[in-house]
Image (cartoon, rainbow, N blue to C red; front, top):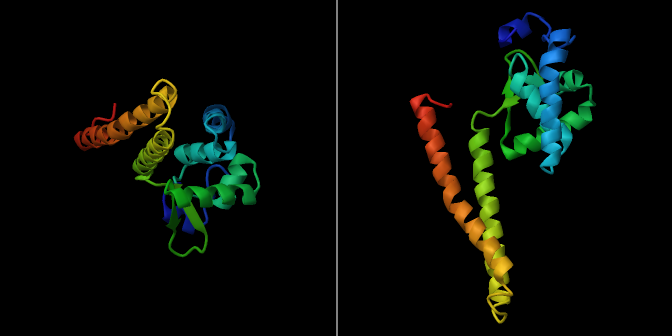
Length: 177
């Protein structure tokens, strides 16, 4: 079932009862993405929800469906979904004739994430520069670590937009490999 009409006809989402194939194939991916998310300083559940929305059918799911699939509470899923909507990674989807709100991965979410990374790099560069100005009375050697941090963030801040442009060009050519 992959379209709103099937939902309207009362068909159940395929994960209502996750069969063995889903458990063996999809769920290990979902759980591993949770651990990666956690290792990167985000909640494990954020990675699990992201993982589920990357592999589920249909591509949009309600909070209740995500909670059922991930064997988690609706409140935990709702908190993550709201956060990801706020960041632009997920977007709400309305299905005609239903009051339930569904969510899916935002097709522009990768670009938004990239832009957020560039903004974070800018903040770190500016903070380094402020530190260097405040500590300008010290010797260059004493400020070396701070200067290295500033230089690295400045370099990456310059390079990230170029990488995004190259990615967009590859997508326009249909070559995402």
